[in-house]
Image (cartoon, rainbow, N blue to C red; front, side, top):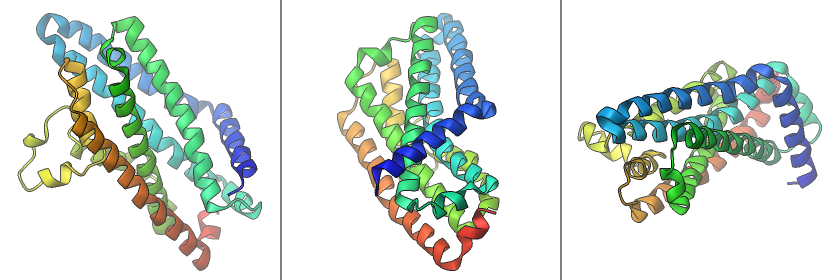
Length: 261
């Protein structure tokens, strides 16, 4: 892996992103307006059930952060496929490791910028202080969310490269089922008994449970915190070999040419 090629691809990604006004709007407009909407709901709920409104607001911050951290990487890959630029990138000598690593870095930068903006809006508009009162635990939760979302983006990329770009819709739909099974607003116990073992292995389950505790002022479960990060890292460790295999197979079969046309 050559760092100069990675930096060049990151610069290319940022240039394309800044010029695609619809992408900028999609990545920032919807998450920010969602936070404002649920922040207003939280303010309204103070006279009924303040804790419930606060939990919804905090969980939506995590959900939006996870969504952007996953979808932007996959949308960049699909943009390359639809525009045909992936062929030029590969002809230029970009390796598959450099290709995905650059996309992960640029997406991380965009996601962290969005997170900072969402937290600023939540703090100054709705006085959301619970996240800042436990900075170490909050940082670990956001790190676990980021790692899990990166892993999801790599898994989706591998699947699309293998199955075909007609499955590009998974870039913005696949995360939904994982969020659903990760029990964001409710405990794992609401699921049928046969489904609960699966939900405990979802990449965001432990993170969401601790995020609810954080929002309600309850104690953070350090064991659960470590479990969430371990599961996220495990997903990432499994996703990378799958991606490299998919890329290698697509090169061997010549599918990469079709993928970029």
